[in-house]
Image 1 (cartoon, rainbow, N blue to C red):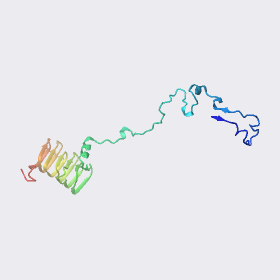
Image 2: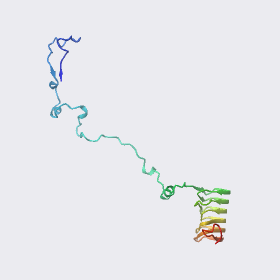
Image 3: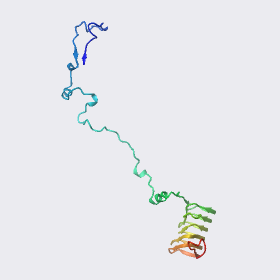
Length: 209
């Protein structure tokens, strides 16, 4: 690369005082005449600014990036229980209703899914077939009326018909059951039982066995 201080002796001079042409600066300059950094000379030529490395830094080191909170805390990540995951994988919607402790209900109710009774019910509870519904009466639950479902579990107190043809009735040690029970499978674990029992065959469609 050759550089001249002006356009040449034959060209008109630029309006500069003093004019470099008049001072005799007409020799040719070479970039090799410019002062160079000793490190650049040893490297075989000029180096760009982005090629220079800072002391104690490797040239091919990865760039430093400030890390932020890119992931939520483990405790805040919702995790489904294995039993719920199994129900969801079957493609069926998970429905569960609860009558909480201290609440009262009077009348007839048709429930889709499963039902937990921890309060007081006066009337009829029905979970229509062929759904595999389950009614659970907890230790604080009281039902004065009829319960119809595929499976019935009692830990509290019931007075009426427990109707589970083709299904199972489970009476636990804290249960107090009065009335009538229709079942295909019956499990009694020390409950206070004062009821008429009627076993129904699974293939009898409600007829007595």
